[in-house]
Length: 215
View 1 (cartoon, rainbow, N blue to C red):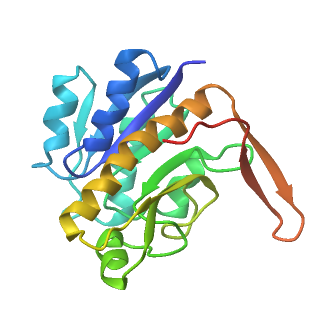
View 2 (cartoon, helix red, strand yellow; view 1 turned 120 degrees about the vertical axis):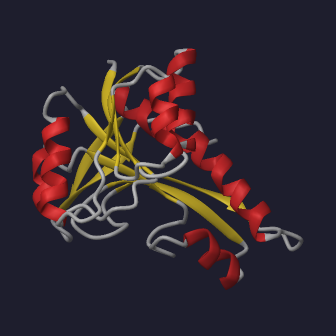
């Protein structure tokens, strides 16, 4: 099926561009309903507008989190959305916001994080992993839940950290993996290639990928 998605983004939009590239080639069957950014100067706004996407800037400055989220939801409610895709969205999302995207077994909100969660959560994951001295780092695509950088993991892949790596080279290798992994995760959802299994110990459902070719 063609997946109906909306983006929340705060920065350059490189993951947005990677997803749009896969849609353009036909590798990913998806229809972008809109993009919303909370940062007026974010380059992703120009990227989105140039791609012909319905684009909104809803700044969060001087607003309570609840007021800002109400404005975001008002914009999103005009569209039919299967999944809300976070692409460098630098705002924590409240449980009240997530309830508007309740699915059968998970919230219909998906995020990408530049580490092998649960290791190195937070906003400086590449830097934290690099300075810790990891031999392998990675990227995680996960469904969002009420906790930061948490939620059921859909896909994870690793990349090596070489002895001669600078931080910039290390981050570039990770970003290249992000640009491969995020479209692949959305492709799995569009192809109904994800099943959910119930774990009686944790009393939660977890995604199980039927088929996936690694990046």
